[in-house]
Length: 347
Image (cartoon, rainbow, N blue to C red; front, side, top):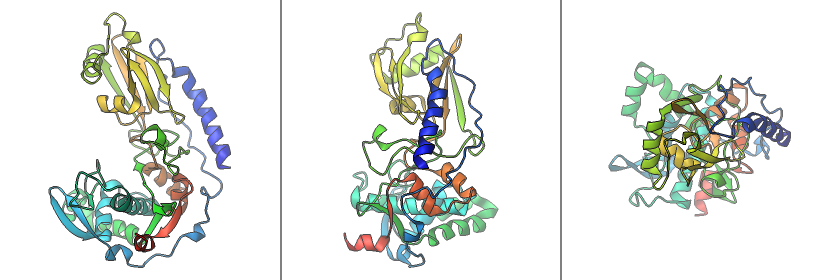
């Protein structure tokens, strides 16, 4: 069933994308307004959810971390760190099953960072509170400002998500996985090999959020030719952008199997999709172009790098009745659940 869904989505994607792969003279169609996608009819994962361990073991409270928050290293429990991390990374208004999935992903990612891939940026700490390095983290004071009169209500929701998944992590080959996640995807998640290199459990899978579920699912950035040229030349040394040949400033556009920009030629220089996204400050690499009389319009779909669990996709699945275990087994390929302390005892 999962294979049938993937093949169907790929065929649909090709039907949609082929007419707009030729940039330059071809205009971008109006942003899609898709029908609500069908959810998988069977358990979306290779394992039975019955293999998931029980909860309430107190493992999170027992494990102490050295966390770099700002310029200060603070010792706190995994339980407290996850509270601030899940609150920072996912809206508390999301479905409880999505929040539980987020808590397990955050716990797993933290262990991966601590024991598998320590950051050289902060050798004095196990993890940090920066989303650009480890995990976003909001202390209680910031959450009080953010939630205001709803602080007690939202605080309890987040603490419940952490407590309800106490000690549960995801493993592959006996070690905690790199549980990457992102805000939202455009039909498919991205395979890790398109960005970081091959990771067997970070494969491209169908995802179920749409324009009906995600605020600002599409974003248009319209640039005058002079503004585009100025930005492009600032980040692509050697590019030749002839003012009299604007339709050919961009050529050789290629996309990954998930429909994201893989690379393109800007004025004779090959640039990756990730580089182009950073250069122009775009929300994702699900990028399409159109040329108007005096401008270039860049349209993006979704938000983030696209690898691993889609947070809005997880919330969409949860709203359809899928429990957190099935959500995680859908987004992370061929992984298993495990006790956190069992893994730590083998270190």
